[in-house]
Image: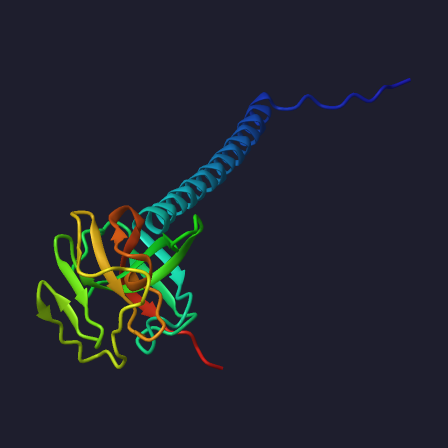
Length: 202
């Protein structure tokens, strides 16, 4: 009775097969490592972008909307306003965003107004609507409303401290500004307006 025995495999062939399998495994590992590195690089880029955006929009640049029509027609209610947070050393004619509480209230509200007088200036508004800064009448060709004082609120003349500015709304009749709540403190200023995005009227 004869028995069948499988032939012995060539040792060289076995070695070649092991090397091929080993090389395939190495390639698979390298591909996996590359995928992980690409994912890590993408994640790092995303984190950097998010950090830059956070710094930009919470520490350098601010975005808000115009809360009312106090600056009409230059800025309409609802327009998006971008302001620079790092600039609080304001000058006359700067447009600023600030938060201030009304007289007799602790609740701060957002305002956007025009700086009329800077620290150290003296402001006076006469009963007949003449705006004086340091004794000189201010010419405002772009203002289409009479500048009248609000009776019972700010008393004139007002001499500003080193950390104060005097602001007025462009819509002088009924606008909420320093005639109502007095000078704006430097610590209340959010920043200087740098651009305005107009709201679309659809």
